[in-house]
Structures are given as structure tokens and as C-alpha cells.
Amino acid sequence: MACVEVLGRTVLGRTLEELLRGRVDSVSVVAGGSFASAVMGEEKVRFSAAQDVWRTAADKIAGMNADAVLLIRLGAYVEFDPAEMLQFHRDQGEPVTRACNKDGALDLWVIDPASFSAGEDLACWLQNAPQASYFVSGYVNRLETPRDIRQLIADGLAARCRFRPQGIEVKPGIWMGQGAEVERGARVVAPAYIGSNSRIAAQCLITRGSNIESNSQVDYGTVIEDSTVLSNTYVGIGLDLAHSIVDGDSLLNLQHGVVLKIGDPVVLRHMRNGREHTGMDGSFLANLEVGDMAMSSMPEEQQ
Amino acid sequence: MVTSGPVVVMQVPELLHAGNVPDFMEELGPLLESNRPRIVLDCSQVRSIDSAGVEALLHCLEETLKRDGDLKLAALSPEAEVILELMRVARVFEAYPTSEEAVRSFNAIPVDAVSQDAPWYGTVFSDLGALKQAS
Image (cartoon, rainbow over all chains, first blue to last red; front, side, top):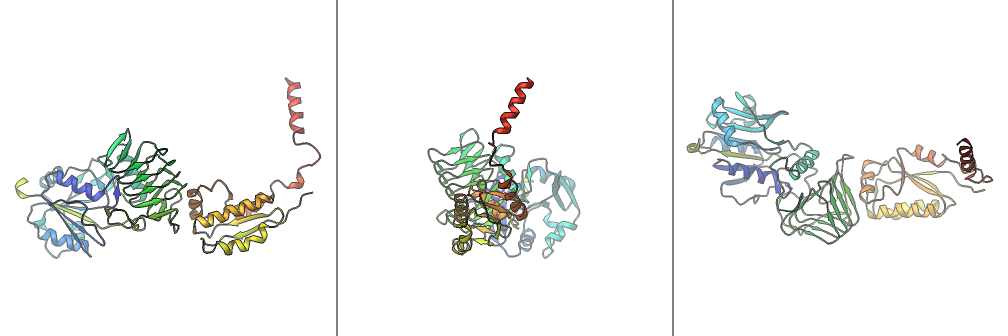
């Protein structure tokens, strides 16, 4: 989920941007499985792929020369102030500070690396170490279910959070990425998002908070309603796509709660000629759990 | 008097794709050519239908309607429902939760129950006359 482009940018990319905008010195991203390291060309960010994400994260924490490490297990989208959380951690004086919101604990910790011994099981240590709870009052979307993705998009389009569409607001509530094209006769009803290099053919209707991510194509006369079309996806002629998330030839219908693999390339297909940008290849809907982590350390001189 | 045969219930295969549409049509062919065909397609097993499959279902409906019959769908699996909605044909078909209900729907208004002697508007006009008198 963290590497899936939503409203023009991945959750990982947005989280990194927020961290780097704050007082964070450097960020390490550890990911399991296939992973696009070119999420953003930022010098302060180091990427590594690992079989055992927790083990790799533990090794990195043990080797860090910082008095506080921010550990984020991506999945949830959380808007918080890293500097404020670090200050809270320092004030509490516990080895671990874990963030929470009204719905419970979040996978977001500040760790005192001196309290953590190399070789320890990081996940167990985080459970058992004395800890303080830091309440996040900002926007949180746990991104646990596909409905959460649609909710995040709705909230982003309605400016209820900082998860804003990437591109230009061509009309109130209608956002378009670079190179996006809407043919004459097609209709886009706000709020909606058309990602970069995507094409909406004539007589199409894009409505009710739908988003068409980058390098996708919606063909002649198709109606997209309350739906998400993920990157590099072709949606065929004369279709009625409602309450769904489409990723290549996979369709998840939220109303009926079914995931379908459409074996008919004239209906739905993955567009192979699209630019690589997410590291996901049509498998997102079948694999919603990812174990990606972002860790950041605060330089001692800034604390 | 117009006669019609029994209602035939047929199971739609799990995958109704271009590859097996000819087999499906071959099985359904004799039924479609009968007088006033009354067919229920049970879609409970359907997991996937492609555009050729949808085309075949529409062709079957067209043939039955041409012969003054009807084709109804029953026990649509969520997958079949999503595909039919996606391809904008869900509203074209009459659909029922079960095959039994679909079969019963054919017999809801038996042809024989409608009198061929009295005009259909007879009762409407007599009711209207009564209303006028009352006012």
C-alpha cells in the first residue's frame, strides 16, 4: 500500500517529504520483496530491500549514532509533527514512545537507540520496553481496508488532510497531473483527479470523487463513478465502473466485496508501455499487507 | 390459444469465456429455437464472464424475445453481478435470487388467466364511470 500511487504520489513519498520538511537528519527505508528504490531522488534517503524487514531495521537502529530514532511501519497514513513527538519523548524519559490516536496504537515509535541492544528482536522489544504514549491529534488513515483507500482519496480531494492531489487544479475540485488529457466531449465532475499522462476519451464521465492515476487510459463512453483507477491501467469502451478499485486487470468491487481478475484485455488490462513508478505490478489488490518501514534519526546537535 | 413449453433451468459454467461460448451456445441452441422458449440461467457457479460471454447471453435473450419467450437470470454470484454491471447489461436481464423464484416468475401471470374476450380497458372505464357518478 505504501508504494501505491494515490492522487499522484505514494504514501511512502509523502511520508518522506513530511519527514524531510521537519527537522529529520536522514531517513532509511527498509522494504521487503520487490521495491522501487527510485521513489524519490533525495540524498538524505537511503533505500534497502530485505528479506527480514524487522531484523534489518534492528541492525540499522543498533548502528545509529543518534539520541532518538523515529521508526514508522508504513501502512497507515499519519499526519504528525516529528519535532513535537521527539520533544514529548525526551520529556517522558522512557526508552520508547509510541504514537496513538482515538482508535488505538499506531505503528509509529520514537526509540532511544542506546536502550536497544544489537541482536535483540525489535518487534518484541517494542512490545515489552517501558513506553510512553504520544497522542496524535492530526489526520490518520490506517489504510487497513480498500475502503480506507477510497476514504483517503475522498479526504484528499476535499482538503480534509494534507494528502493533496499532485498537479494543477484546472477547475474547482478537478485536479490534473502533467500531460493528462481529457478529450472533447468527455466530462469530469468535481471532485476528481486525472493523473499525469493519463487520457480520458470522448463521451466518458468521471464523477463522484474518482481518481485516475498516472499513465492510465479510460476509453470511449465509459463512466467511472466513486472509483479508483490505479496507474498503468486501461479501462475499455462503454463500461460502467462504480464503487471499485482497478489495478491493471484486477478489479475490486467495494459494494459486492469481490476481487475479480478480468481476463479480457478489451475490458481491463495493465498498460505495459506505462512508465515504471510504483514498483507494483497489478498485484496490489491481492496483497494489501506490506511491511515497509521508514526510519529517521535526529542529529544530536538539533535536539 | 397460445401454448408454451416448460421453463428450462440451465446452469451457466464457472467460466463463460470466448473459448467455451460455442459449447454453451450449442447446448442452449435447441431451446432457443423452440416455440416461446422460457429459460432460466442459473449463474450461481459463475466466477468469470468475458465480453464474448456477455455477448452470448445477450444473443440468447434476443433469440428468446424474438420467439415471444423470455430468458431470466437466477442466483447471480457477486462476480457475475459485478461483470454484468461493469458491462452495462445488468439492467437488460430480469434477475432473481434463486432459480425457483425465476421459474415461478414465468407463471406469475398465466396466459390462460387473461380473458381474451373482454377488452383490457373494460374494467378501467367502468371504474372511471363509477368515479364520475360519485362526484
